[in-house]
Picture 1 (tube, rainbow, N blue to C red):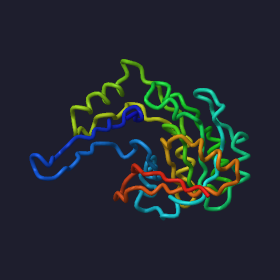
Picture 2 (picture 1 turned 180 degrees about the horizontal axis):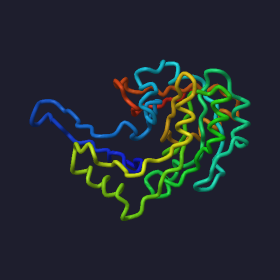
Picture 3 (picture 1 turned 120 degrees about the vertical axis):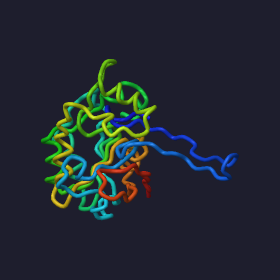
Amino acid sequence: MPVYPGDPVVALRPALTTDAAGVNVLSVHLGSQSGTHVDAPYHVDVTWPTLDGLPLERFTGPAVLADLRALPARTAVTAEQLAPALERWTPGAILLLATGWPRFWGTERYLAHPYLTPEAAQAIVDAGVRTVGVDALSIDPTPDPGPGDPAVAALLADLTDDHDPGAGESAQPPALAAHRILLGAEGGGVIAENLTDLTALLEAQARDKPIRLSLFPLRLAAADGAPIRAVAEVG
């Protein structure tokens, strides 16, 4: 599974089997930011709310989509490009950024997704939005590691080391400007990343069909985020 450079690699292995132990139990090794997941404010600031401190209302509600599928790789999304979606937004709704980037899932190009400018992130917060989702690896630019990048070495090492607290830590932390603006919103914001293809939801929105979204995470104590099963109900 593609992960943010430096994050733990996902590994699913049988821990117990019916042949040997009478039951099947899966060993699950992954980071809190793996796959389709949500970020809590604590992800970028230890003084901000953790995942279990956020109200459930942050993780469900009607959805409004911004169609950004025409943008090329590593394009900065501006506040002006989000204006049509923000004009449709209503209190309690979740803003979804549809970049079309799931078509590059599993390839190096998946890291070259469009991203929010700080001004665009601030416009989202100023509009009242507290939950934002994107069908890409991050709402901020993702670094493009080369073959000799230490982050790549850490990812490979993690495949054979189930617990190494230092693995994946980079010497230079990312700026994550959009993360800080959205997660730092009054009351605490939520970001959902790695959503799958949103085409069906864009089509439903074009037909004025109501969309309700659920992004409920595992209730991990003092966590920065968690994987989710994202579900949209249309009509």
